[in-house]
Image 1: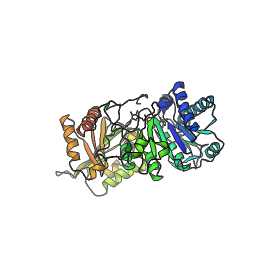
Image 2: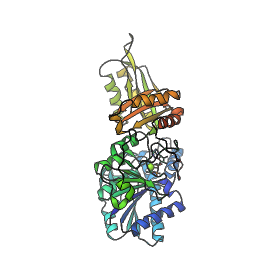
Image 3: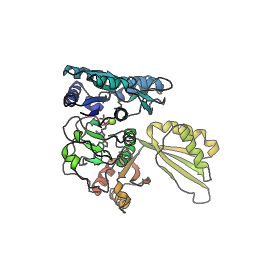
Image 4: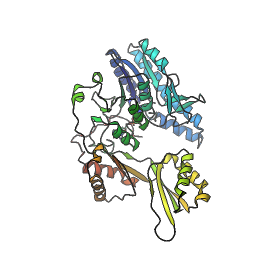
Length: 431
Ligand code: ADP
Ligand code: ASP
Ligand code: MG
């Protein structure tokens, strides 16, 4: 007997039919003799709809109240799912994040989990119950207010609970059969990855592959917890995200025994949620970049790529560009305007019509020529590269937003990743 944490995303529980389907799957796992903890997301596009509602009544809703509103989405699904399971003759109890012991800091909208004390979940399991936990939410240690963990945060709830309960595996159920070499909604010939190293999955998640939230992968790596990403709509084996041995009780013998040949490129994530800020006419003096980026950091904005060149010509001035999530754009501009007198730049330009495509794979370390091949594929499509950044196992480029999808398909083909069969997308709106 093992302990499994199963997370079901919004598209898996989009309506009553979906909830009944998921309930059957949970019941089958329980009847197979396992202890089962379920983390559930809000139904379908509920979270987006609640955000739209909030914005209709206030252009900048107070963060505390927005979290209170958004967490109601997960509370609906947890209770309805518990009802569906009890209708199948098994005992299920639902818990909010706070009741499940998910303790966070107090940053509303992007809270970090600082502790998990799942006493009530453990007790429910000991009494033979299935525990259903509302994902994406916790309670602040300091203020005792309800917090949310950021979009996609139910993935992190699931992995954090699995680590705290010492589960054998965390299964992430979604609307595709696993992690693919690219988003199957954009590249129909994307290939399912059977197994991926955590450092590669971190780069995929950090660069836009929203199939797993970045923090959930960080958490899993820190706790050596295997993640199995799979579809709730099909019985197929999905993708194992782990550096450790795959737990045999929860895997098909085929995958457990498979000796993976490591490809050079594992995947091509893309991101259409970033914008570019350019600070024009910055003095090319020591300390100026520090002032700019300190202002951004103090506004608690995470930036991604930075590009700056030394000034050529007699002006002594240069431009500094960086990318950041579109959602933080307005705050970044406010923060920069405040330091304008100290920095003495000319103006700030904001461009949200950009896209970022990345190439990820540990094989890059030992294979020269990867960037040349990527840039050639983009050149054939007449795609201009506006920014480039690299890590040891990743190359990212910024393009125009309307060229992004074509770029992903071209690079996917150039690296020989296309499969012969088309990937299945079972549900979801891709929103
Ligand atoms: P859930 O609601 O189950 O959390 P998400 O919408 O957050 O589901 O994530 C699943 C979606 O992630 C898929 O439908 C797919 O469009 C998208 N996706 C992006 N990149 C990838 C990738 N590399 N592999 C698989 N899916 C991806
Ligand atoms: N419902 C939340 C969201 O849409 C959390 C999640 O689904 O993981 O982001
Ligand atoms: Mg998700």
